[in-house]
Image 1 (cartoon, rainbow over the protein chains, first blue to last red):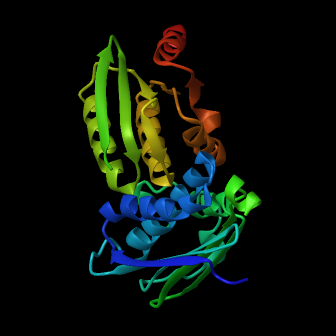
Image 2: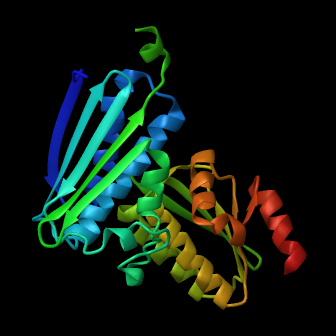
Length: 148
Length: 117
């Protein structure tokens, strides 16, 4: 399917940018006329992924860059959030509900579970010392998409 | 995009009202303010009042769970009221729904705590 629209952003791994990233994606996706619930799902997922890159990928080092790409094709939104941080050694373990590598930081260990639940498709790839890439898709069955 | 924390003491109950967005960036302020108020004493229980909390992610779950453990460890209870559906959904997904009591508003939350205190 051809890509109707796309956007790319790269920003410093600072916690202030978590809100920036989710609001930017919400604003971009709003052209599909999503419901409030759909927008909230997407904001939550972006927040989870970006927070993971900042805390786990870069250990809060603002020198690190988080990359965000969003594509809209028809009624499908594809989001890629990627970092060049330390990577995840065992993705199977990381994806388990309530697992966290940083319990001392009061992490809930729910990030991956939320992303998998809120999106229609979810795929994670990671390599130690190279970084982590999360690819996710969600269908937005809005009025606009139905009538176009 | 930020978070305001409003604290109010009613007898032995600390009411914590969160306004704005609770994520990793704003979690620290909730942690510090609640911890300070709880450890300064005089309150046994906590009501987490979330009517004006527009957004929360799993970082919020972590900070709520942390404060729940603190309150429980001191023999108190923590309850949640007025949570938006999107916030409730995260509590459900994480299983926190089972260990925290949820109320529709502050009044019913306070009434619920009176019964056990």
